[in-house]
Image (cartoon, rainbow, N blue to C red; front, side, top):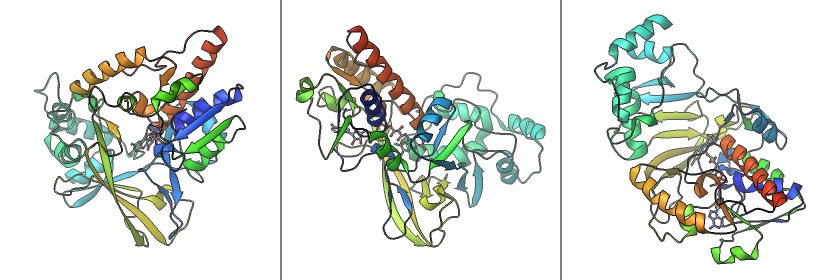
Length: 377
Ligand SMILES: Cc1cc2nc3c(=O)[nH]c(=O)nc-3n(C[C@H](O)[C@H](O)[C@H](O)COP(=O)(O)OP(=O)(O)OC[C@H]3O[C@@H](n4cnc5c(N)ncnc54)[C@H](O)[C@@H]3O)c2cc1C
């Protein structure tokens, strides 16, 4: 198993429970992959090292699975945004609309009012910008989507497909819960402790600070690879495009911003958001605080790949890598990097459980495991 993140840990555990011997390697010096959490020695705050992670899902099986390894405490993600000199609540809800327009609209009135702002001349929105203008009109688009999206994606919303903004990004009630899912929470002692418990099985050996060499693949019955798909082939066909994040970390004595996530919608502010990590564990008390200012940019060769770009060009290159991967024997590409898709943690876990089942079924039937249990295209 290449990678000791969620994909590696969950697949590894299931195979170990079925009697396989599992070797897990990771090139980092810690387990947990991008979900890694650790305590800041100065303040005691639990820090989400590679950016904040909130667990939310509609999948009751996955919710039971994670609760089997760690206590999840209630946490509701409530995001604020600073825009044009004011603080608003996100996602755009009735409070945001009434504050923004200085009104006291009820839900039906607000719906009608927003429809009157929307650009109804756009009948078939093609770009992110057209989609936003069609849904909410120019004022809300500029305040809440335009600058933020330009910073996040490094391009104009005119160059992004409409599909990124799938449904009406507005609520006509006062619900400010960022997510719609039935289950939401935070692991009491962080994701790394949860993943350590998943890995705690006599059939699993973990080796850190070890980079996988594909030439070693034949040493194993099968390899599950959760590293970057293009990296497996030494980037022979080029590099798949990613956005990376720079975190400017700072400590503060007291409460810096009064909430976990504060977005910054204005283009002039160079960062997209500030996250204050102690608010991700509201049951803990800390005098000191750890915050991250988050900057987004195109990933270079030595950067951590965070968000796959997956526009037309990238998809063409992805298709070429998938053809290569299909010819490789004895390896299955898994997880967010192995399949070049953005996957939330719950989806990662669901796919990992199903991938392990698929492998066990192939073992029982004596058939070959395919290169992808979940097709990336
Ligand atoms: C900024 C950010 C915020 C996110 N926030 C949320 C959130 O709020 N909620 C949510 O549900 N999900 C969130 N996610 C998604 C979440 O991070 C992923 O679902 C999860 O990390 C996927 O796990 P993985 O094991 O597939 O990949 P990873 O966690 O990336 O693990 C892959 C591992 O493989 C190792 N590796 C790679 N190549 C090699 C190699 N050649 N040799 C050895 N080891 C190698 C890496 O070091 C890494 O540890 C977020 C993602 C990002 C980028």
